[in-house]
Image 1 (tube, rainbow, N blue to C red):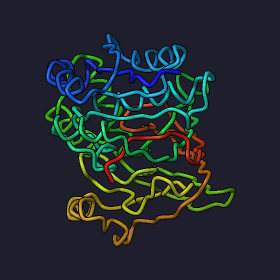
Image 2 (tube, rainbow, N blue to C red):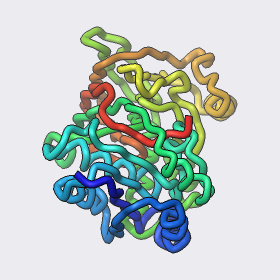
Image 3 (cartoon, helix red, strand yellow):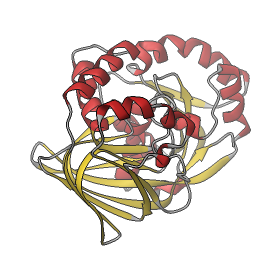
Image 4 (cartoon, rainbow, N blue to C red):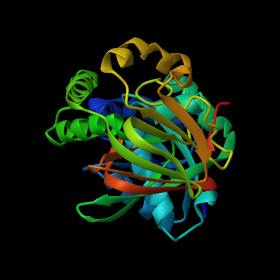
Length: 309
């Protein structure tokens, strides 16, 4: 086993920002005496493959240079391999993506000097991960969640943004376009939500958020009370709600007071099962991962992460 880090630079993150920032990052890593080898992604899901190969080579520490999507890919690689228990792997991020919501959870700074100082200091904690079973192209699909996932409106927006990314379009303006398009075209639909084997809610739902972490969408708090190492998944359900009221209540997403809205329900669970009619898109850490029905189960203390808390 090596003490060296594997650095995975996501060429797609931040509209190419990760690649352009690499020379500056390289200088700072070397100035702090951080030993590493580096690989650059060449296509979507390449980061997952690089992570798996790094673990086979005996590396146990991975730095992701990118955003939440790149982090999600690397986590999926770590959780799906059998070379080493996932809790023996340490994961760090240099956040150069668009949202950087998981980095916000651990108070990871954006400044290159500051973030490399955090990595060099090496403070780490174990955090939970959720296993998400959905349906992709008509067959079972498994992904892993390190931050937040969702169904309904939230997942519809992610699906639309995914289509844009596949056409080479990305960035905040493109995300805003998908957000507005989704808001105008999306209507609530019947959901059935079961938590730890008990029926939690059955009825029309606008959006569902499931959180190991609390931040999404560039700082919104859909699961504001989530604790990343409590062995539970926080669940927020927004029932059928007038769109005019949604617009008025947007500030509650940024103040952590979304649960004060009458149409919002919350709970915590180890296992969550959700179906929708018609089926709903599913997103995990901002990435589209197929359709409902889904089963989500927490894996306590699943991964060691560099933190600044």
